[in-house]
Length: 104
Image 1 (cartoon, rainbow, N blue to C red):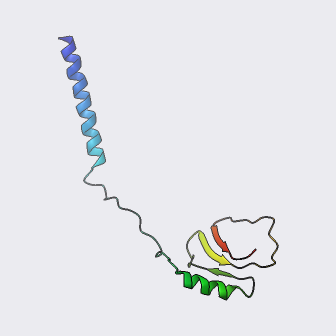
Image 2 (cartoon, one colour):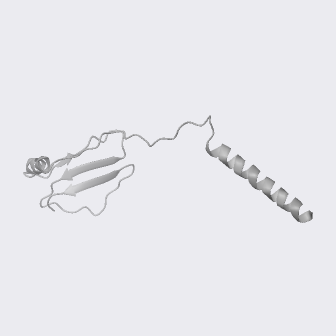
Image 3 (cartoon, rainbow, N blue to C red):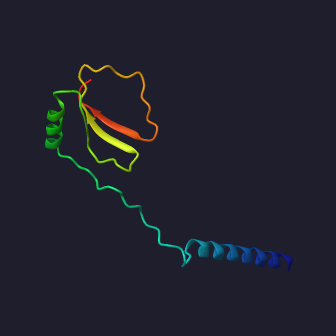
C-alpha cells in the first residue's frame, strides 16, 4: 500500500512538471520567434567587377570599400599597397575591418 502511494505521488509530480514545462514553452501570449532580418542586402561581385576595381586602385596606394558600412561595426575593403611600410600596430576600437590587400 505504501509503495502504491509513493508511485502515485511520483506520477503526480511528473505529470504536473511536464504540464508546466509544456505550457511554458508554447504560451499563446508569446510572440512568434523568427530569424533576424539582414540590415543590408548581400553583396556579390563577379570576377570582372573585382578586376575592374583592381585596375582602378592599381596606380596608387588606395582603398575602396566594397559595402556601405554606415551604421555597422564592420568595414569591408580592397586595398592596394605598393612600397608601403607595415604599421607596427593598429587600433580598432569600435569596428572590425576586413581587407583584401592586392600588393604588399
